[in-house]
Length: 423
Ligand code: AMP
Image (tube, rainbow, N blue to C red):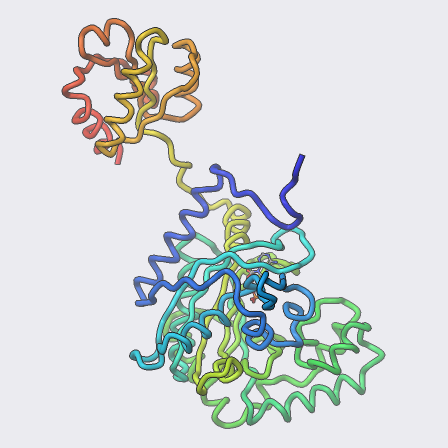
């Protein structure tokens, strides 16, 4: 038997309420802050991510699903959303719209990662971006939206971690300082960190291995080495986050280790923090559009893993609506009744009333248990008597099985009334 590829999942109907709730909340927050939905392709030319995510990141170094298509062009399944969205912004002339262009997307993403709890090879992200504006209040709007998304899903005790990593003016000197510091403390670093030191010293700050922690704790902090413009941007950003009533912690080890990420970075952590637990993260990327061949264009955004959000909702035992269930389950006498039952189910569906029924030729008792298992509100029984008299028996499965006869003529209005009564 075939198995789903390692690190992929089948999302089954019982999880649907979680997905629906997360998606609903995403759309609600988008509407409240006026973000428009975008869809970009599942794959892009490899360069979009190689340049847009950055050659020295884990994603580009080891995790991309890259293939040559039949025309010989190198394509990559998207490992994240931002690069594709910025590519679309540039290609579709969105710079001529009022700025910032505020966009959101729900997407599947692909990373050849090591599968474990909360870490998949195909996963889903909610992504929000605001492109074309450098004002730090935009960063604050996104942080507030990000925070509200979780809060309104019912998540509690989260923590917002923030930092600033400077820009092309002040970051080179900071990185040089950082690299010097690490070179003086090579003995305290694992081999992987020693290797990364040569390609991307900032990324060391992200390292989770215990053996490196003492050295990392003593490392110079980016926020202490910002130029005046970056310091002002950082302070203004945080004053706006404060104005939105959101508590935060400045975390000097939070980084995005790429040249075109600039200034603001943030992450939201759940109460129990593990290596795979970050719910979502964001940051500013004022250098990205240029990397993709466009005019210099500031931008800021965040992404959050849907599977991670759902794991956290389950861990925190947040109440979710039940999976959808049919309004009625049509139950019929096997001989003669099936065609009438099928027709009735179709009539009800056409009237907007959800209806299901058994297939095959099951006995009435079996069909009634199927109605129970489907968690239908009513069983709608079409026996011989009912067929002969143009009626149905309506059995209320949710109030202990009360039964009454209803004429076919009144059926829809009776069901509509019952539906209204349970809303
Ligand atoms: P990143 O682009 O790495 O900052 O990821 C953004 C968010 O996507 C993270 O905070 C996670 O919620 C989620 N995420 C990243 N990688 C994975 C993965 N392999 N499996 C599931 N979720 C992921």
